[in-house]
Image 1 (tube, rainbow, N blue to C red):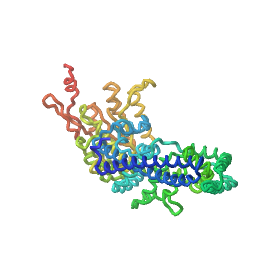
Image 2: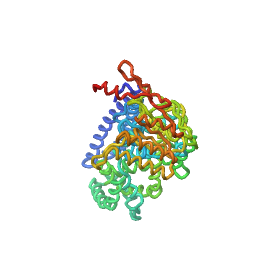
Image 3: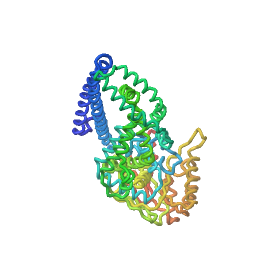
Image 4: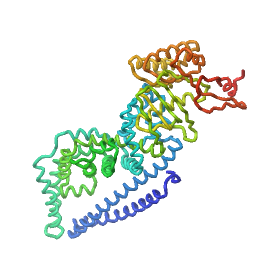
Length: 585
């Protein structure tokens, strides 16, 4: 951890929590030795020492509770400190080490692979603050979704309100990070919840007899009214009784969720219950957590306690208690009651928490960036952007551009010299469309977006395993676009360096044919090309507009301003670039 990036308040609280943890550990160890000695002496020699054993046992349990609370606080503060360090890295766009969401990379997807949505230095790395697989998958599904103005507007209101509650947002993330470590599939647990109960009516007898009989025998042995051997006989009887519930408890122990998962859910539920929201979407997500029938935080706290007891039955202290008081019957009885009353809700809560994680991720990014411009969804087939910037380029280096796609414009032909910014601009436009669709503000002063579906063809690589050339891969991609066009879809396309894998004559002829074909459909978009000859089509096609990026050669160096300009590019720089690299003409 780089403490230079962490606030002093958090560092002080973390140091205090760690010191307290060391003290509690030493005191707890001392009490344990006293308790063990009192038990041995009480059973073998002086029964009165069993009273000291019970007192020290109570103190030991209390110390365990204090230690666990301190451990949770330390874990929480540690994650807050790490989050502050990560915030600085995200601000500078140093995204190495962040989860890249590599499992969501899909080359066949309409746009994610071309726009750096997942993978190294990706949008997912920039604003993913989810802490488990469910939340991660939820956020990824939003990023993969096609344009939906209604859903985007709904999420946008929720994200804006959450971004004004930075403590809620940071505490929500830190809680999950602190307790969800090795995630365990809950499929087996959900199956267990649906199964018929394993409680039998005659179990009530050992349920009541165990605690009462064990307490009476311990008391009588402690005051010397009976010999300690009676306790041994009671334990033997307990072993036979406990075999009745051993198997169902073992099965439950295997499928119960990790305690960290349940703890996080419970703390998240409590945070949501205590918060007041004005946004209707946030309140709809709060409804499953808190209503007139139950309070989810209390239900989950109860489940956490049961999971802890069931999954730690092999602990030495529990074994001793279990043999004396037959606690297993109490555990399975309480587990069955919980299953009947609340088992049907837990899967729904997990789904809701996944959505909260995705919203918290977007809200955290919004708060950190302080990017609060409001996008406008239009019914017209237009796009308007003012000072549009790429979110993955550091703020001090990102160059903003204005852009306009009018209702009567079908194709924008983008020309420009090498490295002048054509591809980056196209990705800038596409990635901002994705951001607006998930509920974020665009990286722009203003952004108006029509009812488009997004499609890109920018990274078409060859595949040796499938004997596919890059040119064939591009044609296959274009075929997908034409299929969407034939189906009547309103598509906004981004085609980079069209048909670059063939000779100049065929490329120009094929490009013109494709432009005509797409113009006859509901599709609109940008096509970049190095073939300046295509820019002459604007004299024949009223629906085509030329735009370009330029470069300037000064003192044997090429300078770029990365600003979008009207009209075709007047000059190219490939000759000069090759010359600078040592190729002599």
